[in-house]
Amino acid sequence: MKVAVIDLGTNTFHLIIADLEGTEPKIIYKTNLPVRLGEGKINDNMIIQEAFERGLLALEQFSTEIAKHEVKLVKATATSAIRSAANGADFVKAAKSYAGVEITVISGEEEAAYIFQGVKATGLIQERCLIMDIGGGSTEFIICDPTQVYWKKSYNIGAARLMQAYFHSDPINISDKQAITTHLDQELADLKENLNLYQPNHLIGSAGAFETFTGMLYPELDLKAIKSYPIPLADYQQLSEKFIASSHEERDQMPGLIKLRVDMIVMAALLTDYILELGNLQQMSLSTYDLKMGVLASLKDQTDQLLSAKAL
Image 1 (cartoon, rainbow, N blue to C red):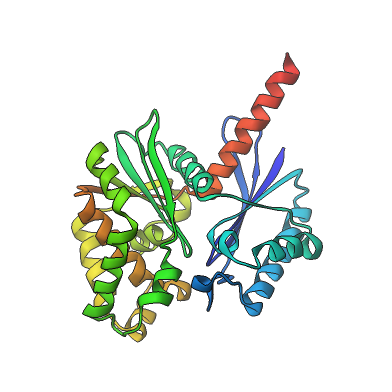
Image 2 (cartoon, rainbow, N blue to C red):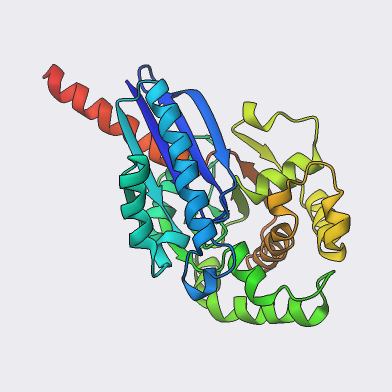
């Protein structure tokens, strides 16, 4: 059975088409488009007209690909940008009429749950750890071990939100960095409490910025061919310092740094640095599996259960 998963992120729309027959989902097509849905007014909870139109055009392209592959089931999930936008419901309605895509707007809690399922499928969770997924609109945190989730929460502190609110200097200056730290201190007080309570040692970064970190540190890696990869803290910290100290023009020339992340990577590095220190985390890894792979895993579970019920 062929299924499609569409992840409508704040910066990027993703499409995965997979065959669910067999023990594990088999990816047969994968693509993404830099929609920048949060451009301009994400902190005003508004999708501007240009971004609105880019989103619909991206979904139209996805629909063409889905039809070409004769997909039987489509699951499209929308996260922070659409969830919080005053015209988010208008976008959902337009997506249905213009591109034939029915969107489910998921809560931050549901988003974190899907991220956990995606990361869990890599086999990377071996002990108590903190999963972190930095999006454009929101960032999710999950404290878990291989058997259970102890705590999870989604915060509206995505890279695009932080950038629009606090990134006023180039390179970013001490004042802007301090403003971000003060904001994170206020927003993440309950995360700090739970890190102190559960004391995870291992930070697992879910795709996105963590793929950028890993890809730039180890350009010989084929990120599409791996589920996870260790990131030595000393290597990461050196790269983070380079991002934070550089200007837009300097980052724009860095090999392996895609245009969409040239500025947002500074926010991602500052946020990651903050979390590493907040939790006194001693180990760090990349999971290339994220929300969309969690959604795919849930579809696999649902179809397996239906087949089992039919067999009975």
